Image 1 (spheres, helix red, strand yellow):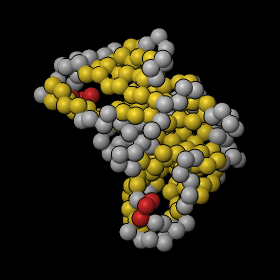
Image 2: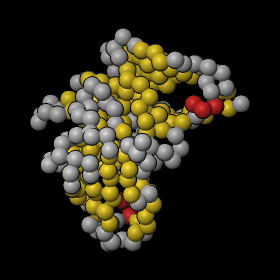
Image 3: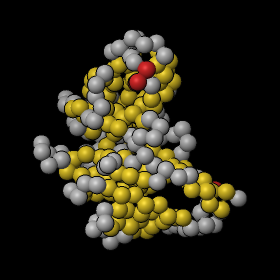
Length: 115
Length: 114
């Protein structure tokens, strides 16, 4: 039961380097999301994809780009990493609209440190 | 003011105790409410939805008070395995532009001790 798989689990970058976080789900979900979690702050939405072929900005999109490669995969790219992007990143998916079910299925998280 | 506020804790309780957490939200257009559980260095997982009439799942009871804009989670007969961070989550319509937004609280940490 893989669910939501994200890679890598850990990454250390230097300021200015780029990297891509990969995420894949095997639950045939339509919607996918990228969140970041920082101490003292709730999970904050970076970008989401309501369905294959669409992507939209969340609360904190600056410095990030996303690609919904197909229904299963949703990647997050940091073009020029900054120390402020040090965080734990979670990919999540949901069957459809979150309005009533509210059930997100999360990956195990990716811990990113930018020096 | 934060859209969703929780007491960060930690709440340290002995095994077998009853403990309650509250969460307040600021947006009166909020439509649905949830509690998620997050173990240390793990991903959040849905614990339960919160219904207007209140709902119970084993030792866990969730309540919603729309007039005062808060939700609560009560855990009875606490177990060591209940130690985790409990995240309050609120879902509301975005009036301009449509769609909905899921907002997470920062979480309340519970430590159940022998």
